[in-house]
Image (cartoon, rainbow, N blue to C red; front, side):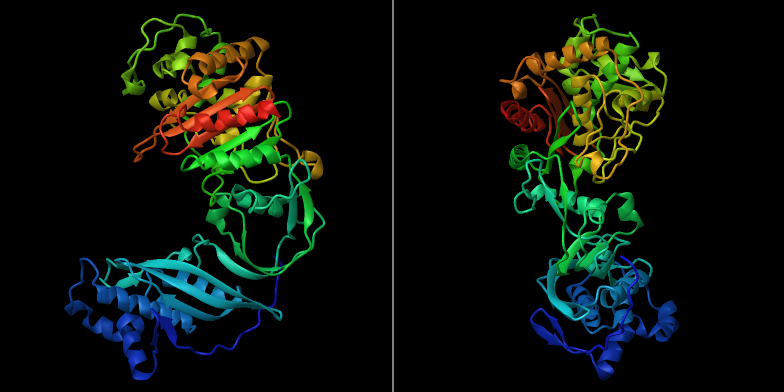
Length: 554
């Protein structure tokens, strides 16, 4: 952002507007309320030994009094007083002080909404002023009143999101010249990308601006922004613009997105709750579409989820390369398999007593894979994922932040679980679309959203390629799955040369598993996940297949 001179602002105390009523805290009444919630520390200390700590649910009066003290104090600029009725006064003082000094928010009016138990919603109306430019700011937020266990006092459960719902703990609000100029993002055909046109792409546009704003030739404007703290940076969240006071001059960034496929992807993810999908071009790595039904976090690029049985593609690559199995070799899939004290089960406790490995792959029978664990070293799967599929090395450079998959070295039962995409294995649709693309072409092409030539960045490479024999074997089992296995229903109507794999990943505390689906067809590969959706063939499968069918028709 650069350094900016801070100018102290004279405040005017104003009556707090709470629930449509005027609450004025002045004179003796104000002192009494303050003493009740921390201003009278000395008096409290003298009687603390004689009063039991109150426990149990909060009364409506306790919630109301705490809420009104907090809101009226914040509105009047009494930061210390507002913080005294929270459970983290230091964090509250820091953020509310910055709200005025760094974010330049003034003339704050807070209106309490209708309480629901201990939760108190409220609306904010204010003005953001910076160097002679002002704009109104309004939004809704909420907080919860809790009873502090140490002394029984009712206090506001403090989080940064109380101040603004887009804040995470450790983030700050800053108004000033934007750290990066705005951008005008274009699809591959030259059309402008906007969130009005493509609702899923808000986080992508934020990432493009952060990466290319200064390189694209634009000029910064003035805006109120969320500046991410350490925790948010680790989660790869980008800074976010909340209010634009003056427009800058945008630079232009061209992406690889297909307007036709992107529009279709946006539509497809609305058919399921918590759905995400990515389409890539296997021959180049170009990202053709990315969409999420939830727009707050880009699960498609940055999610970190167990991929379930779609991981069996990588496991099979390793088994074929080690010559431990071939597609047509006889290989039963027992109902249960014991490994290092764990008993592994197949879905619905199914079993295949007599059948080929290809049949078990197509039926997604778990124990046909886990029973290879004694023949493998702990690092084999990690090595395969890194060397052939370019996964798990945190070095992809697609043009916006991504999570590049994780296949940690594990032992015992956890290593066995990794073979079927559980344990510590973590992926997202971008990673799994790349896996299918790698099978399609036989070699890894790092996905990218902006051509590397735009900023001369170095893209990730895989240290080796699979053999043509291994590729042929993988295509055989994936094509069988698409034609006769768990992916057949979704892939119906597509060419017999197309391959697919389904997956269901169990998640602790979740009634239904996450449903996964990844496939290739022609020069298109795609993957999707529906969180808590159930079987991938029924949930993510139709989304992925619809996009592959559209791609084949272009």
